Length: 353
Image 1: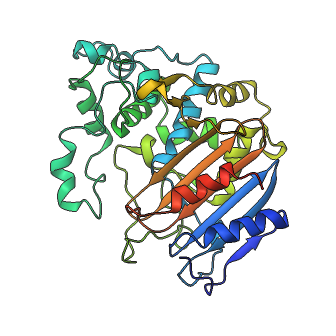
Image 2 (image 1 turned 90 degrees about the vertical axis):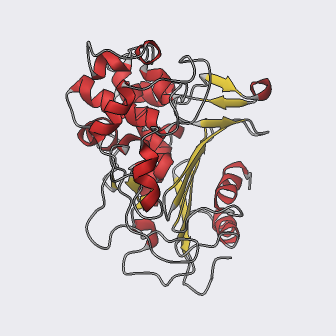
Image 3 (image 1 turned 90 degrees about the horizontal axis):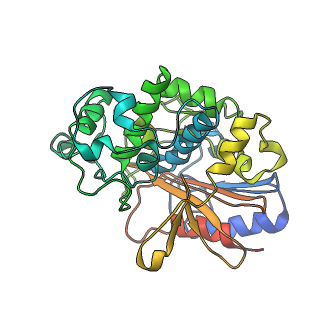
């Protein structure tokens, strides 16, 4: 349970929401915890945790998003498509290494396949594990740079024909990032800033650690601090860091809340596109996905969400289209089997109070 003696702070939105967040926070055990809700642009933020707060308020610290970075990659792709710079059906190998001989299945992999986890690629390259296992709890990704990710893709032998099966893949989304950089002649970090972060006013969002004291510190389950995440060549799949307030701004853009409504037509089109269901999978096609979000039905309409975890942090992003409701949550403790963090954040997304 979160230690309420560690001076939890609530930024008032509505009293009912403030009470809801304070109650939810008691279910999560983490050194640092932020639960943030936006209802039609009215924000309520609760911060607390078992650790003593530092000089920078928790809601102003940048947290590692891990796989919750993928909606940023998806929005970038959707905007580039809206601008006519690439197409969803463009073949990744043709953009990344024109004329390079690849396996026929790799030749058929499109940008859409990479983003929607239907490329047939594994979760990570086969040769990733030998270098990662010796430092699995400290720095598994840092020794696998971008050029190695690209080489692994070009020599891959997918297990399944692209477009036929869903298999979650950090490898595939990372390849998407390198492909978009090659197609536009712009480094991924610059491209993301130009097309997504700057237009949405996400000044506290980045893909690298910031100045000392501005990034949240992750912790193992036993409370031991862990070093900042180095994603190596897997930047597009998990490198985004953001403050909870910036996360709300990002989500508000998707809900159409006044504070986050874009004026650029290509960005507006992209925000609409990433909320549209594009595939179903599983038994009786029970699982629905958009380009970038998991989608669940509820009695109050669909909810779209994505969670992420790194070696010592967790993040949750979610919203209910058409309702103006958005939820962002961050915590600085590594995920474990009995963890309540995602369930708690998801509960805020489906609560009608």
